[in-house]
Length: 361
Image (cartoon, rainbow, N blue to C red; front, top):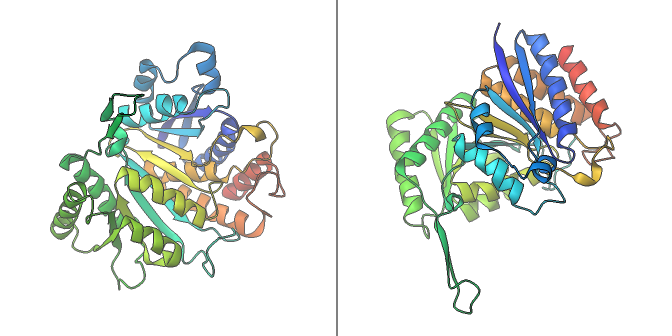
């Protein structure tokens, strides 16, 4: 029987509440599908920072390397200046654990209100593969004459061929395994590169050359598309059904995945993974810590449950992952009145119980 060691970081605000419901479903799936999960809790977040001054100690990074995966609730505390926890915990973990892929499914579930006219679940069902460790996020740059009228700020976007190639390889492999044959592409799964070759003529020239070289050589069965990032945003709104798998750099990926989340019904249903295919990956709901709802048992836990579902897929527990996704579709389509906090018709723990019971059935 397969056994997985999972680190659980509840984090801040409602993070521990939604993480608890994801763990509930995870344990149920393990029993149902014949594997085991060994869970270890970590208290990284705002409360610990205010108590000790620590965000994510170096020893913690080494501890986290020993796990098969990490499940995160949410990071963000109203009494801690924005950026401290995000950089000190999320970005530090992402970079030091080399989680070089950010995987964001954009999937509209049944019964979820979509802001796009005449679009339904059959239209909004694609995945964005975002390179997660390069671009302008590496911190290359600085100021000169800061605070004067002549101040200059420079922040450089940097990519190596190594970073680009490994992100593309992951995207092609994902499209090969999970692609759904986007409309208009016949019987081929499709990988689209989102870039800006007409302006960012160095970085996205590299991306585009590597994209076509790898596709022609190693993935001839995968259809290849290219979209400028501004066109990608337009088609995500007008014709989302055109997309299958999208691969892009860190900054563009950061932007278009939030646009995608809104089209799928908002942050309350969106989940994502920070993935190191050769190491430890971290999965999380995309919505924030929502501190005003802390302890009220009203927050929607489905994004966290979907994060656990993504984790199981990445660990290779495909049947359990598929079952959880099917149950979430049933819950959104037939049970919940809304995804909004306090308007679901059920409490946080009741939704978790409902999903767990259906997974066990």
